[in-house]
Length: 116
Image 1 (cartoon, rainbow, N blue to C red):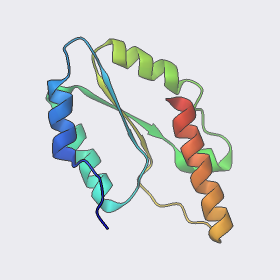
Image 2: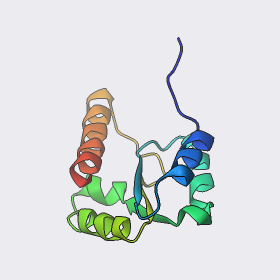
Image 3: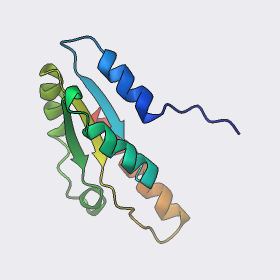
Image 4: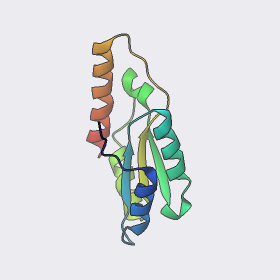
C-alpha cells in the first residue's frame, strides 16, 4: 500500500515559503514516536516563529480540559505572523477495549476539529 504523506521537511519548506504577514496553523494529533520527533523538529525552527499549544488529553478525557480559549489564542498568534502548532499531549492514553478506544479517539478528534 502506498501512503500519501508529507514529510516534516516538506512541511517546513512550505511554511518557510509562506507569504510574510501571514501566520500558519499546524495540527498534530498523533502521539507516535515518529510524529513526536517531527513535532520537536518543527518547534526547533525558530525562523518559523513556532508557538506550541498543547491539548491536554488526560484533562480532556477526565472532563476538565479548558479548550474554550484555544481558538482565540490561535487567532491572536496567527495575526502576529506566528506558526501555531496545536498538538495533543505526547503520552499514549490507554483504554480498556476497542469501543472505549474508538470513543476516546473521537473525543480527541472532536476537540481538535472544534478548536480549528
